[in-house]
Length: 151
Ligand code: HEC
Image 1 (cartoon, rainbow, N blue to C red):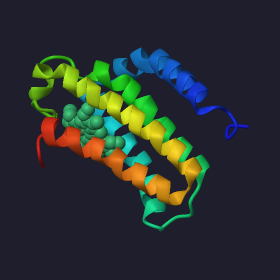
Image 2 (image 1 turned 135 degrees about the horizontal axis):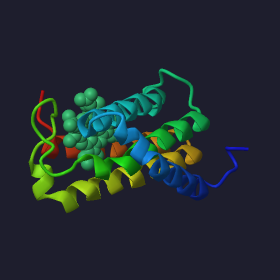
Image 3 (image 1 turned 180 degrees about the vertical axis):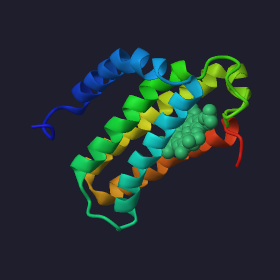
């Protein structure tokens, strides 16, 4: 059933669900904790297609869809989780975010597009997915290079 469900429809459902959950997720923890938790959920999700691309796990379109869904849930919540002045302290976020908000949020949209593209590419085959995966990872890395304090 879920495999034949059109991706665009699933995307709409996921985004609606994420929007409905937003106040709950933020109320129980600080914004910094919430965004770090969601970033961790994205790295966990990203490991699924990464292992397939590396040939460590079997190619599985359903598992790619599940990973993409997790990333879309996280990115839908993310714009609200970087309020002005929330850099510093336990956060690795850089103040440049607040001076370049349109660029920062544009990168979150780029990540949504790249993750949907990843799910589509997985339907074309493994090589196509590998190419899309590198494009997708470049979005993570590009944003970290500009807006995240290096370790
Ligand atoms: C729009 C910018 C942006 C994008 C895109 C982005 N990140 Fe991040 N990421 C950040 C920022 C900023 C932080 C620091 C957050 C903080 O500490 O407050 C961060 C932190 C993290 C962390 C550390 C979380 C922790 O526990 O401190 C991980 C892991 C991470 N990102 C993974 C990813 C992955 C994987 C992707 C791509 C699927 C991604 N990020 C895409 C901006 C981004």
